[in-house]
Amino acid sequence: MLVVEGIKASYGHTEVLHGVSFTAEEGKITTLIGANGAGKTTTLNCIAGVIKPQEGRILWKGQDITTLKPSQIVRMGISLIPEGRHVFPQMTVAENLEMGAYTRKDKEGVRRDLEWVLELFPVLKTRYKQLAGTMSGGEQQMLAVGRSLMANPELMLMDEPSMGLAPIIVQEVFKVIHQIKEMGKTILLVEQNATMALNHAHHAYVIELGKIVLSGSGRELLQNPEVEKAYLGL
Amino acid sequence: MQYFLNGLPIGAIYALVALSYSLIYAASGVLNWSQGDMVMLGAYLGFTLFQLLNLGFTPALFISMAFVACVGVLVQYFILRPLRERKAPPINVVIATLGVAIITRNIALVIWGPDAQIFSSPVSAKPITLGALSITPQDILIVTVGIGLMLVLQYFLKKTREGKALRAVAQDRYGAILMGIDTQRSDGVAFAASAALGAAAGILVAPIFFVTFNMGAGIGLKGFVAAVIGGLGYIPGAIAGGFFLGIVEAIAGGKISSGYRDAITFALLILVLWLKPSGLFLRKTRQKV
Image (cartoon, rainbow over all chains, first blue to last red; front, top):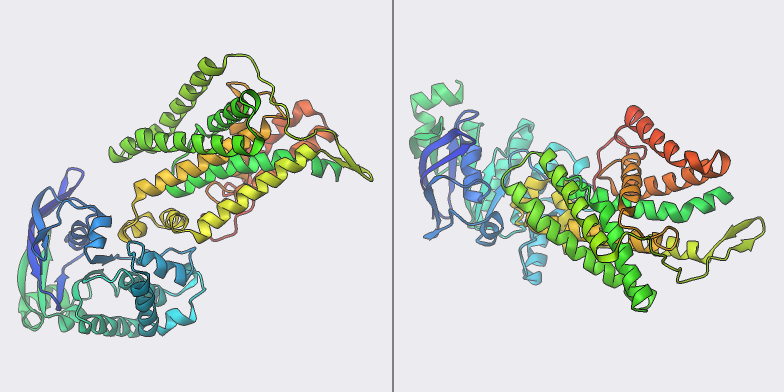
């Protein structure tokens, strides 16, 4: 289980997280929804070790990972798929996937994982030798997910995987998220597309201006009138 | 055609120095002004090992490349890294590398003295004539070793784990961090490789010019011009820029006057910065490493 306890984080002198606490259960999809600037991405960056929180702690499977470096956190089985994909544009799909497994030493396992990632995303197989920068947004998102899977993570942090994608591609992305969950991986999903996220999540949190203001099962929050008014835009 | 041939060896040297600028710039976003002095350091070490200790040319080349690579790592670790951690503005980093250049130059002055040293060529400098063209074995050596090192660099960047990690960092630093790549380490690798390339350029150029403590300023600046002409941070551009500059200088020196050679080089720099600041050889899409 991932436990986030009262983390505070700042950019310069501006505090953006004012004590965020939540948990993500193993083998389930947990989502964090909220408006632009609410602190969703900062929260994920804290878990991944890219930003160090000033206060609070982050526990993964009972172990304190708050002060670990990003490279150590990847080795602990936590992988962040960043907002905007951040694939390596001048590298081929093959090289991008290889970079995903950068921290791994088990060649046999990497080869096996590569095989099933290509099975999960047939498009990556057909574009195997193509430069990532020349692919469409949806294909790049698939590559970002595949690259992250190559690290063989137990916990996957996904930052706005549906951003900037056509509705039909968004459906596909969520289908993949479900498949990944079925394989027993834990997912923490951050989304602005609240309807989609809540429909798929076991548990959900609403974050507003650096604080968790509401939590419940995905279905509960879908029916919550406040959430409906603020995030579902119905 | 003869001018073209004359321009190749000095072009290869400019290309190596240009690569050393571009590699560091692409991988860590730093403009390292101490590159020219790594060239000087390489030349002096080569001189000491080859001329004074009578080691062969090849061991002298590799030992001084390895030694200067270590200097590069020290510069990255003790100068760049602390500035990075304090989130210093880029101009501070540039000034710090200028400081490194001045210190290196003065250390060389203390060790090797103010007099110019002669590095006698390991092969003959007597031209071989082929019809109307002539080339010296020394020129052939420079071009061969230069191109050889460029191929080694290409292999390193495309085929090895460290090299690929370096390219990943150059293309998307945040993405690379998320893959678990240690960017301090890849910065160190970039500085080491760049310093080693500079050192090789120093040993290759040493038999042509005298070895002096302030030789780094001139050749460093020429290499930088070549890197800018090719598009700073663009590896194939640095190679093309180096050879282009070498050949232009040879033609300018032969057709106009060698006294105007440097003026023409810097006029070319101004022209490139004015008309096509992203470099002559860069296509529309921005490419790195």
